[in-house]
Length: 95
Image (cartoon, rainbow, N blue to C red; front, top):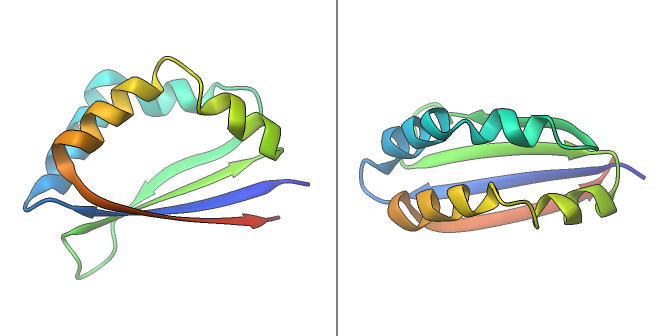
């Protein structure tokens, strides 16, 4: 069964622009999209809420997503989250 994940980041003050610039600069989004089993890995900007960022992921399986979490480029995302993200909410659902 395929897996969907919605990750909602609550950003530190004015952190969204820095986080997105960091993601673009390190190329991690493209790296994730090349992973086996990744069907979608996209960031969305909620209208009227400059302190939030939505990441939508779709994976062919829970196993593929678990492998994703072990990839070296995940350290880049962790460093950016440490710098720019105040809170993270994760919702997993079957597709």
